[in-house]
Length: 253
Image (cartoon, rainbow, N blue to C red; front, side):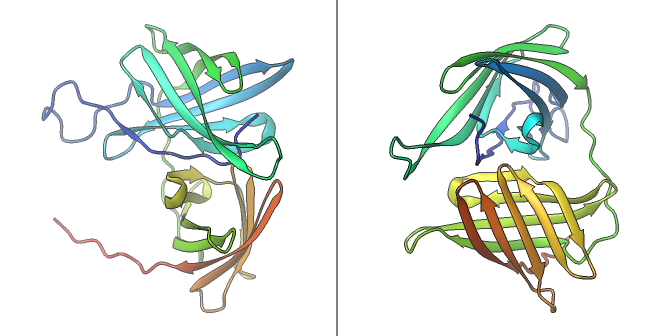
């Protein structure tokens, strides 16, 4: 029942007093949350990470602990101070099993007055109680570390059929917690899906990472300008070639 592909579009939070502060408002739900959901006798453990982008948009990433899937992003939602609504995207096979239909699930919850718990319901092919308790009150942003040969932005295309092409963008950066990879897919309208299980070897220039239910394994070319990968997810296998994007130079204010 857990989604294979997910999307993220942050949503704007209006500050209580426009113009009263230079940066985005502090999101009261920012931090980590832990919960469990029982579906037909099976218990699924989830961890939710909530934050605010520099543009002032709220984001939510969900880890499915039992399936070792991390960083599944929400596609949107709202929070009015007590009521939280999150939307998620998933594919469901058609009755014949030859086509995947686009579906949207939701999580609606009431946040306690103390801000340390939320009580809600997950709706996807049915409704299931899902409550979260706060683990941390702050989001930890790892500090940058010396870059690897993989650091930078990469752009590739997945040729699913003769007429269907899916574009991907990888954002790779090294941190004190290890190499971090975030995946964008403009065609499926998601951005910032975090990779898990990242492994790499700079000498052989090989890398492997998992995003949602898909695993990429690849090798960088000798000139460091391209990355040839093999992407595998349940029922599918594609070869995806990535080209390194030119480094963007920033201008001082």
